[in-house]
Length: 244
Image 1: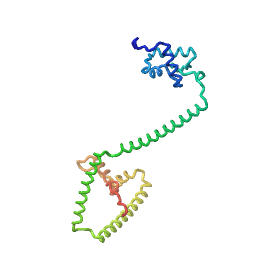
Image 2 (image 1 turned 90 degrees about the vertical axis):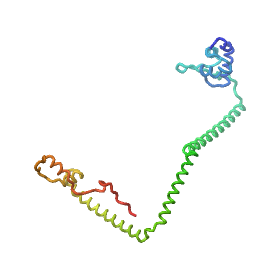
Image 3 (image 1 turned 180 degrees about the vertical axis):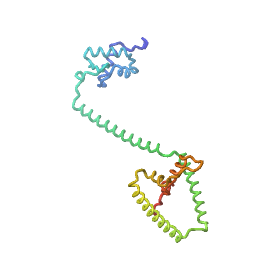
Image 4 (image 1 turned 45 degrees about the vertical axis):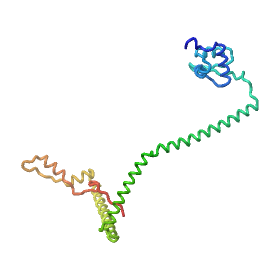
């Protein structure tokens, strides 16, 4: 900072700082005090540091050291004692300000919830596109419905009931046969030393002898690849239909 902007003399800086600390009645570091008073009073940082040190040496403010930082605050014994009326007024002011803070916080929470809801909603152009897509879908469905209504090969209720009854019968038989096959295989596999998959393959293998012009290992591989003849539903990605 240039010499023309050094601010008032040390005495003036000390008076400004002493008044500021007493009015605020809270601790400040030299950097904080400089940042708060720089614009209004044109105080330089060096002048602030020097004035605070002088005030501390004179006992007009208190100084505390925390690590490498020093903080300064008004000497509470030098401040005038507040009367009962002043204390009551301060309590009332605190209560009023606390109520305002709570109201502001509640309002902020409501606005945050509303903002979150709006951010999760579609924009006006998105809604317009969605409506257009739904209209197209409705038109397609209406066209399909008209084709169905105009068709002559409708299924009668009796035919539908017959088909549903047959499906139930076949599904019931499917479950019964699958259960029987599973129980039979489980009984066989209890004494089988290998896995179920190996059982399906090895049971169908035959001890084939090598033929003319064919290597023995080729005949063995072909024999091992023969299946036992059991095809599972999972093997063909088939699922038993749910009961109708």
